Image (cartoon, rainbow, N blue to C red; front, top):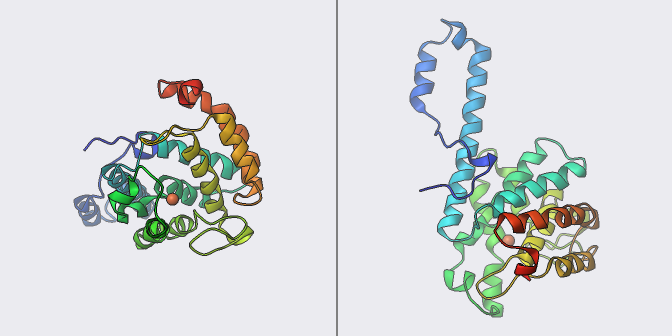
Amino acid sequence: MPNRTGGAFFTSQRPLEASALRSSAMAKGSTPWCSPVVRVKQIEEQLVTLRTSLICAFNQLLDLKDLNTGVHSTRLAEWAIHVASELGLEEPALADIEVSALLHDIGKVGIPDAILNKPARLTPEEYELMKKHPEYGWAVLHQVPGFQQASLLILHHHESYDGKGYPGGLRGDEIPIGSRIVSVIDAFDAMVSSRPYRTGLPLEEAVRRLTEASGTQFDPSVVKIFLPLAEAEMPSVFAAAGTSISAAL
Ligand SMILES: [Fe+2]
């Protein structure tokens, strides 16, 4: 299946090759190629490849469920990394935030299509089911070595800064900073994106709503950093999509 997501995160899909590990082990200690330093470097490269392949595979799963929109998730990840860096975060936190931005809605694969694609307001029962997706996402990703921290960020990406979110009802700094970042960026992206049953909001209206909810739903420090970035980049995002801000209104 072709990879629709594109971008730097998905350029390598070479699987971890057991045969390469075996041949490398057989020659252990005999040449500089197999020195401990080289061996460690090999293993590190293979782990990076495996990690990238897993992210790609999960993204394609989202594609199968029609939950990704091409460069959408890559753009969210780039914005999330930008905001996190501006807030002073460094590796390995940045890598976890990148994964959580890319895969924050992976749990929606567990939500029935009739609810996901319903062209109308959800009933209270349907909404309760939809609210399970952060827990579903955590349940999947926390089993993957190296993705445990990212799975926690996914678990809390619908918490609200004032404690009125879900699933934990966490408030303020109790919410992981990566989750607070994804929350703002995801909400903004949802507001400006068009869906089959509604047209995306004008940029100015999305900015107004984000500003209005700063300090209640959203972390004000995240909103403060994100808004100038969004206002600067949205024209090029619309242009890249072959449309314009006015066309998206
Ligand atoms: Fe979500």
